[in-house]
Image (cartoon, rainbow, N blue to C red; front, top):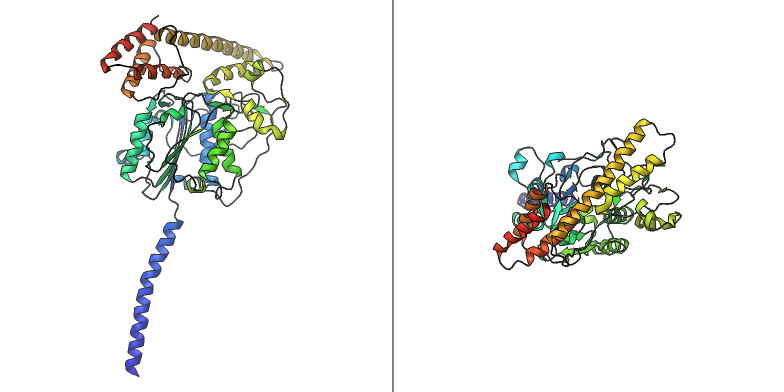
Length: 477
């Protein structure tokens, strides 16, 4: 009897020990599955009030990921120059709105890199988990081989590059090399990149490998300009106040608003691509690049959908919501109705390279419409009119420089040649800045296509000297 009890006790003890080992392992496994392994980087790559939409869109994306999506804020890195919310021309200091009568997306919008720290170099270091920058107290990705990583960039784009606020440039070859380094370092399992900007498809076309688990959407084709939306007069917030600029970007508005109203546990990456592409096609061609092998995954795997429904905000645009530039071209205005919300988002769209002109015209229109303007209003009106005249003259000079640079009859800004000779492209941009006296802004950046065409036609590397001489001569003309 005693022997049997000893045997039974021994069996129970062994069973207990086995169970004690299994349960913690299963518990740890469950805990690992429950621990969020989602990381994100958000970049607003511009400054100044006429680029309001970039910083507003970045904060809206931040809210989508953290408040709606539940990604821990410490796992989201946000770059923004952060001048617009406190800009003297912003009628609502400390607030940003990304759609008509939408919420204040600046509230709770945490920013990790501001002003002079918003550079391509620091973005690349944060992206690749640079230890030296982390040791200096800066936020970097600490993701691993199992992580889902989401990157959103809102920049002025050009052929083969994205511009940053100080008019520094992130070139496509440098971006792709950084992504390859991330792969080598095991900083992600799968990655999704959404890029807002003109010519943004040129960043990855023929450059991004298709077998490294990175999938990308670009706002516009390699030859196309991106469009801003919710522009004056369709920029009413707080029930009836004009901001006087564009609140959003067409691609960003389409993807964020779709994400807010859709069940992201059921909607896949591929489904969102088709929806956003269809809703943007009137102005620009949303394109996909990279590894499409996992586009049947739910978007919640990257944005993490919350279990609560996203809040909705009523849209109350003005009676006629066509943009001011659109009205000049199309004098027959179309009344607003809720059913025409998508139409109005398109009707208020503005070429992203013309948003400064649109901003100046909108401000002038608002001041002229003001009842009983005081002396300060008249002074402001004079300054805005002068600024508009100067901007138009500056653009005429830029056009002339590039007409001189390219042989007469050969000027072509529509033909697209994928950038490959980045050494030549960077050299010409440096020469332009020195010889023409300024870095290239959103308007000038459209002409980088001409640089790319010339660089890709070089018979030998030494032939670049002739290009440099031509550009210097054009700048001095």
